[in-house]
Length: 158
Length: 223
Image (tube, rainbow over all chains, first blue to last red; front, side):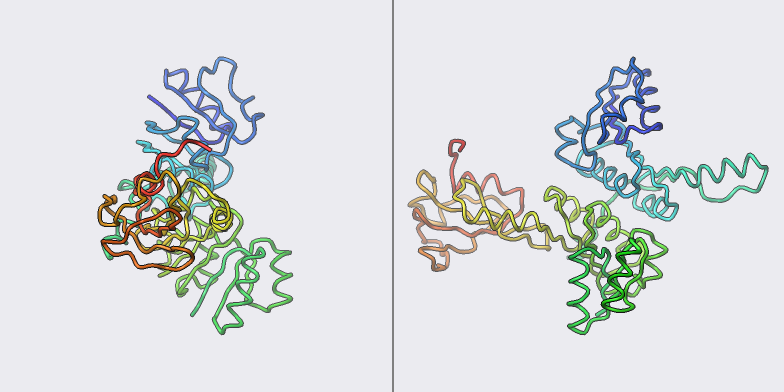
């Protein structure tokens, strides 16, 4: 199994390590090489400095045809773009984008991208810890349908 | 026409000014408060200092009744999200994105952005026109159906020299548009014979490019 992870923060590095241990082929990208210090010395995957929203960079890194494509940088929009590149241009089978803005997290789930919303995750966790009623917003929005781009509908109209 | 401009850099600023001058209703969104105040002082209360990537603020800015949303920030990913939110959340009929990385043009079009403006591509096109290259020149991208207008300079070694236009087996999805011969446009008929020095203007899908290049320019050695 092949995983591409854009963004080597704590979460990205943690998942990269776990998948690597589980025998996955892992490629992780970050724009700063210092970020890779978060990876353990046992990490056997590929850590590459580069822009994960740049199609050329991703292709050169061999990000095509992955089983899993995770967009986990600090920027919601960067993640949205990387995820859509992953699906549309690089043929990723599954994609998850971290989107901290709940509105955008829900909006892109409607467009068919699985989205992970830290805001909702933490709100739920804290309220749960306090024994309060939990909000309805999920931490992960799983899309009901595959990512389909509106270009198809535009072509149908034409 | 009500135009919502997102991004108050140089492009957004001048765009807003020009649009107001031509009598359009305009709202400009710029998330940097300092920059927004500066523009507001000069052109009035059409400026909202909020992030145009956020659905809530797009709504406040009136995205649901906008005829056009123009995303002209300096970041491609922001411009993509602004256009997608405008399109899918607010049913804006026409979205325009500024794109810096020319490689993103196709992705954006694919993802439903109606019009893509790439300053990089434009400048590149302008430079390429002055330098003899053994490549196709991109003259313009057409919003409709991902088509583009390209130019091929027929030079020594081109397999198209001396051939009639009708004898070329052009790729499906492409069409010769015209020829510029000695600076004069010439209409291409089936019996038009291509000669060295011709500039052939063709229209086609990006997929046809490689085939067109081979037929009109030939397999020239590198450099």
